[in-house]
Image 1 (cartoon, one colour):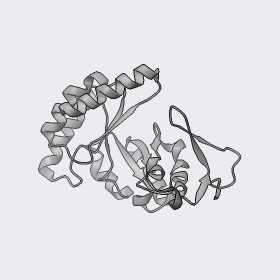
Image 2 (cartoon, helix red, strand yellow):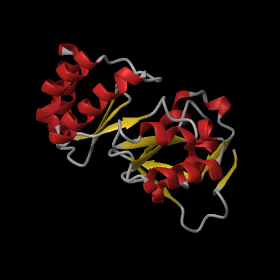
Image 3 (tube, rainbow, N blue to C red):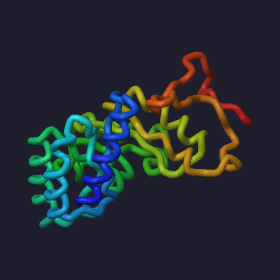
Image 4 (cartoon, rainbow, N blue to C red):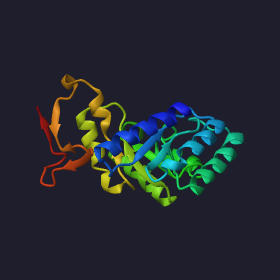
Length: 202
């Protein structure tokens, strides 16, 4: 917890030094926090609450019934400080959202797990029906995969992370176009005049 606090403090110092102001953080716990760790982290991150968009998947992928009630209370505690909890690893299809709606404020929708655009749209519809926020993301994927997820951006509450295509080799990315990142903020830009996804072979 202390190391995490040190990292956040250092990142903020670097951003402040470069004059970067238009940004939000997603703190990804990858289903690794216990209730005790979540409580201790909250004490550390309250001072950054205006910079934090979400805390992603602090709880286990599968919640036992006796755990769920405690994580509902943890959600309410985070909410009282203006910090939102999202599910990621626990969400595959729209069917998972019903089990999670009491524990989270939002969900991360990924095409890789939902099964494609139509299934992702169904999951987004389900989330919004239950007043949940929506974030869209990718697994480690190609540029083509990232461009597909980008089509869902207008339906997201805040945005999405499309960095999956930046984690593979250039040889594995056989497509280009469709979107690009605006430096230094990393904002996603798309060509409004593009046909279809707007991608083409290199």
